[in-house]
Image: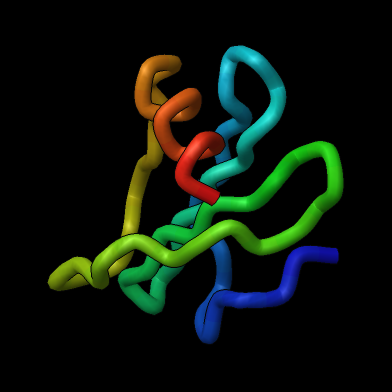
Length: 68
């Protein structure tokens, strides 16, 4: 189980490489997860309202995984 959001998750996407999961929530947060280990990577800056959709660009995934 992936714990991290305060409110219910509203959307989830898996990266094309299947190495990162992004989840959005009613609590206005987006959290990135390591899909292989099911571990927290980081939370993105909060938004002004509930997250309705998330998407992942392959270039961004490679950059994020290198920064870990």
